[in-house]
Length: 269
Image (tube, rainbow, N blue to C red):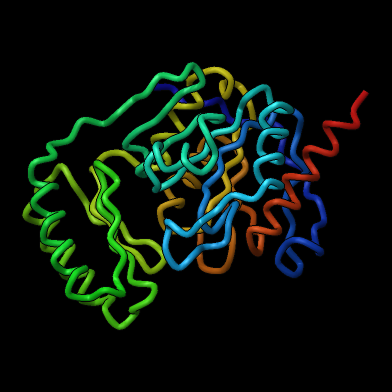
């Protein structure tokens, strides 16, 4: 699959002392931007449990406005399943779930990575037993991906890592271990947020647009690397080392930056 062509002209810096890191900048986005947006930690603050997240009306309206201003070129790129994305946002956007293992394109077609699930079901039963023994752990079964959150029990981090590492070894090459913020996941090999974005870029309405990806976690680094290769705009939310070229402080700063894009496009003649 051919990636989008790199842009010849660099993006222009825009001062954002009020919404970015001190002394930081993010670019002024052009009208032909296409948006790839992580959810948790990017559009929303991270909750104690993924099931506690709720979408406020302001965010829903902002995303719908960006979608309309960009000709539909908005995709939500998440570790959540597409079904979970739709529960939060409705079937209103393109979406890639489970770190790229499944994807719904602009025509509404679903694309799913084929993986053997029998071994994953056995791993799920073992993780359920572990979560029952340690009620502070939060287990997510996403279908092709298993996530174990230890945000409420950070002292269990080493135990969680060792348990999932052994399970991934037993599952073989079809699955791999993915680290995140206070979470570890068993996910299909060969798919990530970067591959999902690359697939979108080969299709309308994203083709030939300037790709913008905003994310906050280790799983988003795959997307940043892809965006950098094709000359797009990669934005890291929060602290920590990253391949992203730009930086915003938190979810409020992300929304403020996106609102500026919407306001400029709305006031064009």
